[in-house]
Length: 411
Image (cartoon, rainbow, N blue to C red; front, top):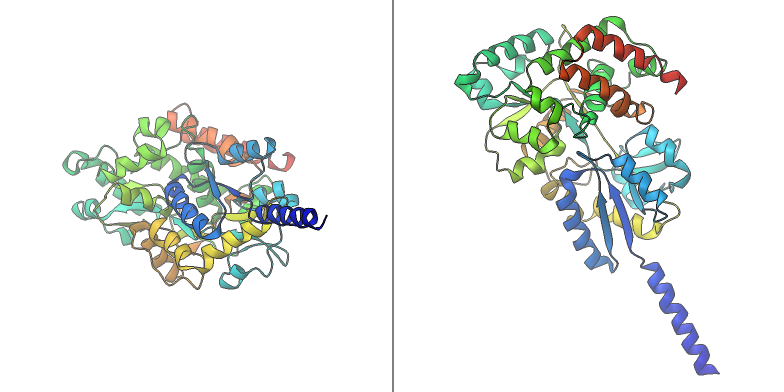
């Protein structure tokens, strides 16, 4: 009988150990870091003794749809990504409290619910109008002067007149198509230009107004004219049918002078062996100077309270506190970490530019993720596409955008 009891206890302990080391799944939204994250997860798994599976959706596929599908399948992820208040509200009943966990002492960018720490900042990201410094130099355009819309108009006109000489297909590499899944570029990131450029980081007056269904007429008109200006000097085919990879290829091959994307594209830029100097100029859509780019923690890892919480938190702690995690964030994924204990500095061009703008205190916040779920990409994105296709003109674009925004209080 004693032998049987010993065997039973041993079996229970073995099963407990297996349960304690259960595999974990991460669903994340950054295709550009997928290879680096997969590699890091594999290395971490060797040391941790359990397997970390990474599922990636984003870029030209809709992350939010993929995440909802994962939850609907019954195989809920242990770690997933939220991009702000809308995402948090959708899943807050499932999200674990990480207050007091080791990583929290090294950042001020955690996602908070009151006094509770609920989100691990994936990185600090930034975007503006990336430029090819060699092309601007050949055209005798000083990027430091691109701090208002009049300067941009003059620069775009000059570059357009020199396209043959400079080997350009278009002045700007921009995408706006619904079918290729690029409405996050327009309906979220570009729309945030209207929401925050020129404002103090704590100033939420414009997003508050939008959420009430209204716009600042003068500011919004200037913004819509800026969108039309970018589209005017972009390749029409790229606007409608370009993917994220195609958009980068045009810029990387020297076929455009400007590139409307963020530093999250640095891993792809490195992979393409791009050797020309580049940096960010502001999205300066007003007549007065607005000398700054848009910088924020773009998204947060959250832990599913119904999942393998202990393993999930260990994974996040390791990201923030180990040499392997730091090497992954900076050197492998080319990110700007949100943690004060990371001493490595990115060598990649757009992340370096983000760090320089951030160090200078010349940044504007991200408010686009306060929009109702699906509104930016779905509702607004479709209107940007109409303008890009030429189906509507700028005044119609402006009115349709205002009409759509007016519906927000009813959503």
